[in-house]
Length: 466
Ligand code: FAD
Image (cartoon, rainbow, N blue to C red; front, side):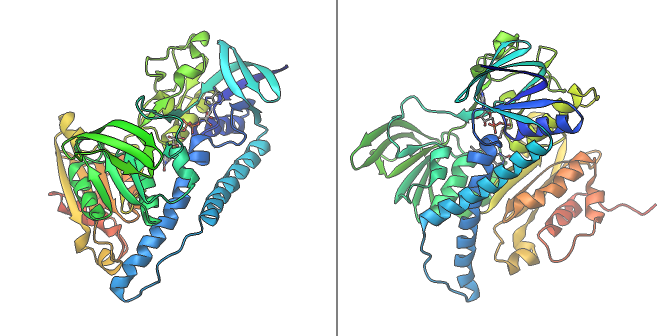
């Protein structure tokens, strides 16, 4: 049994946790980071954002190569070496986790490997392979993240039924695969498996895939996946049965098949639940709600003065970049700075093909909140760059506050939408109005021009020069 005394302990080494620990160390605070994993990086780096993007890159290139046939270039049918695909994905993860370990060492942030639980407002006990470590701390940041939601009626002992971590392992390329849940993670994995040759069915309980995105945006997406994915909207899965020859799934609802359908693999991607109730935070006096979320104020402080919480377990959206910013704020507040977390927009991106991205208010949210707004959309069918790149299945949409003309939201669907979204995020954060965006000279021909062109549609975007 060993004992450590530190100024700051961070429980969980995901993007939130390591960002917090590194920022704290940079400000001269002695920090210890606890994670049950051997490597830093949490879900995002080890089994989330990064490995999925390595596989999505493969999917994108395959799709682009296929598209080229309309421009007179035809490649042969691709062949796949799954071992190499897997190894190259793992190499990406390994390069980044090694990089994080180096950055941690450089900052003298100690990594204690093991499962941590609070025993009081100043103590955490970590059980690891190397024994028990008791950590006494002045301040703590809880950054224990989230886990995939499991459905009670889905068999647990059949490895043909997977969560996102299982899907990333790419054990084989199933002939027929069901994605249970039409959210971002499910669609991203569906994009990968489809590119490698799987036939994909997607079932979603609600009337739209990626329910948080606007309907007009998803209309474009639905058009592009026609013939690629078989979607069943307003339909739910009622039973999942493992048999020798496959997994049989029964459905109920608007687009439900009459009989149970046989699949080679099923990916359950119905959301993630926070890990707040698994760390004995209550023993430190921290309130955890019945779902496992921990409430924090704008400074990421829980109801206990010296304990902060960040990332997936403090609420939606469960995204890495949100966790990073929250981590920085928590560390800065602990260092005595008067900082707080109050972004005007947090970008969301589905790295599907095409990508679906939005930031700030969606039109749906603007309506719900009674915001007086005007929307302007620019279809990519009118963009020279999109036409030249065979990427006309896209749209750029901006939302303006009606009276001020300020940009309050935006969405892009199309290839590289996630990269393009940054400009709209910056416009929102800086309080730019339609005129600012319209008068920004965008390079021609770029897909980004569509942002300026959408802004020009807003009445009042071009006023007289002073
Ligand atoms: P996490 O990354 O969840 O890390 C928490 C860490 O805490 C884990 O390492 C866990 O092992 C550890 N831990 C938990 N409890 C304990 C304990 N008691 N003791 C010790 N250690 C503990 N987000 C994006 O922004 N972009 C994307 O492209 C994206 N893609 C994704 C793809 C997939 C397949 C998945 C599953 C998620 C994706 N996400 C993406 C979401 C993103 O991974 C999370 O939002 C992000 O990782 C949350 O960071 P975090 O710091 O809150 O915690």
